[in-house]
Image (cartoon, rainbow, N blue to C red):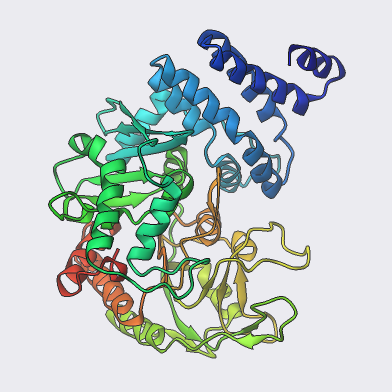
Length: 480
């Protein structure tokens, strides 16, 4: 590898140079030479990061995937030397970079140049926790370890490392079986029926034991104090509000919960809030559905009607003394036009996770689309790429649809509809992590808006709505 490094440096092959430095870092780690492992790990990241400049967003995501092991390997080297705070900086440095750079570009419209934004220093991370007045919990999955950092508003950072070797299955399997035990159908598990009761409780308690118990005493005792989780990899699919302690208490009973793709994204969305000055309300439910081919080669079929979504939109519009766009009124053209001056956007329709642009017309190949009514001007599928081109002033977007919170999971976070909406200018989003039946969705959303109208912030209003629905229906599938 030393020879490969010398040759790649001589001929200016930066990708090969970064790879050789990375490999040397891993070798020195295995030899217990941690100072050398750290030196080569940092050098590898410097070289590999230089490759990203000038790339399209999707290419940045792809290259970040190949570089993910460098950031994880360096975190492991630093943690082994008890350098926990530096490891946190590296965890942030490798997280949601393409997303952050695009977001920074949107916040600096005067420049046409590509922005390279520096990852946050430890001091800046502490400042963000203070400005958010929230306890930040950042997870990082490194080999057979789970690293957890807790950063309270005071800035006093705590670190925990959890061994995953003792798990019967992988953490990814535990997350998947937890969802299945709640009756949540994943893409590969169509037809799974919920085995409520013992199995569900056991799985949610296992996740609690891994993700929350090691840090429980570090979390705020005031249930109105905000806890912001920064997940990693499969942890983006974890229903944090539904995690249960040994006594059967849900996490939402004790805490106000939010999630974010990275700590730095929190700072950028805080700046976006100042620009969120929309004035109208845009509430959409059960559009006249577009037709799509669900399988390659099959003729297009209209998506199924959503009568519950229509009732939901009408009920919410009534709370605000306005009218909802229903059926043929809810065209993609109208929604795009009205979205530019909306303060709240509520879309109760199908979310299509895997739908992507077939032609190369769209600037970014991010999968995901929202179903709206087709018209002469538009096909009725508002894609994630098209959302990126919107200029939103909304303080909140709610995607009350099937599976809208999920997307492809990469080291750049969850790519999909939510990421596109944040980049289009929205500082806060509520999305569902799975398909929820009509009636509980309608009840939860109505309760959320009623709570929010009474004052307090959005996260507290959502918590109160969840607690209210939980009293009527204990199954977390319907409220978490």
